[in-house]
Image (tube, rainbow, N blue to C red; front, side):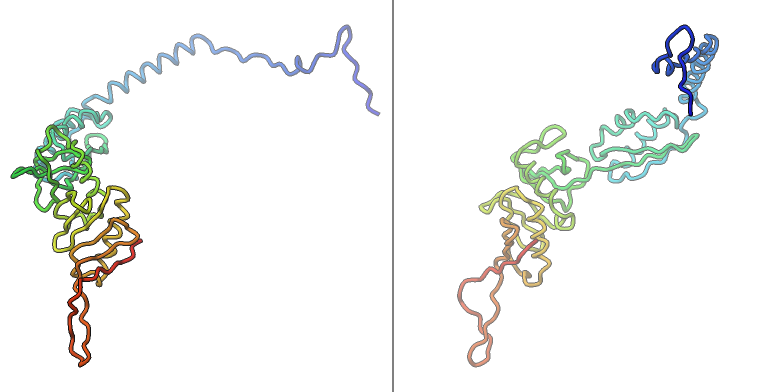
Length: 282
């Protein structure tokens, strides 16, 4: 049998807490701490010098993704700003300042090619409509940014009492029309001649196609999907308008009624009113 352990002479058995105590870790020598701090300071100072030194200065700049009439000016502005940088210290704020005068540029992304190369990819803002007031017109982007140097040829028109002042279009009617066009699929938006508010609400006549009655500004994407579905249906060919106010029940109107055979077999056109077939959208 195991003999019971006896407490040490002259005192109690040490408690579990006291047995679990460990000796504190030794403190590093002061000289080691000072040496480490000195090495760290040298490293930080060296990095600060290297990141802005001529050894990594930007000498070759490649700019991609820029187009339009302002492309040469945008490219020159970005190259000039980039040549004052290094591949270890690309200052995005300076690049954004360089493209500030050009509303067609949405932003830039950079990729450094160590030690002397820098690639700049430009993200452009494209106009979706032209705000028209009398004989004046100015292209406008989806976010309302005015783009006076861009071409307005072929863009849908948005009528306004006066051209917007400043850099953005803020009139409620213009903003609502921009929302309508932004919700449209690009291929269908390219066919829109203009957007205005008529007796059937928001109205958008198409080039070489019917006029779209969209009603209010709610559920615009569903209405555009319904329009694309009906336009793709051969039975809607020749329609003068599409009523999309209820996207679940789009209707193509203004169609010629089909010929009706007479008793002697000759085709005859009834003189009644033109029927308006409907098509079911998604």
